[in-house]
Amino acid sequence: MIDADGATITVALLNGATVEVRIVGPAVDISVGEPVAYHPVAELLSASAILTTARVA
Image (cartoon, rainbow, N blue to C red; front, top):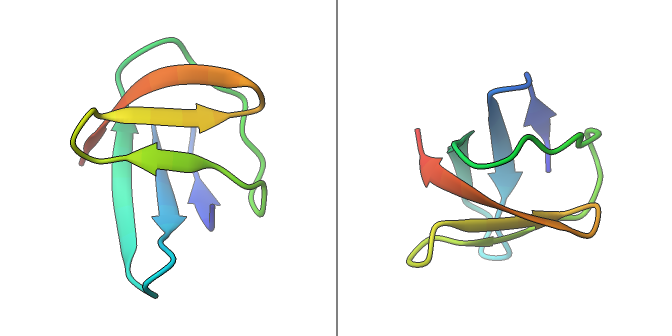
């Protein structure tokens, strides 16, 4: 993850692209540089052992 402001985060994908997602589920305390997993079809974000809903902003 390359940027976070509390309500949205920017994720660097393995293909070199970036995507900004809006957290709509339970809040996740994520630090810049922390590894995350994002599934765009299921709209899931996994970070800090927490799974939450995230949609493309």
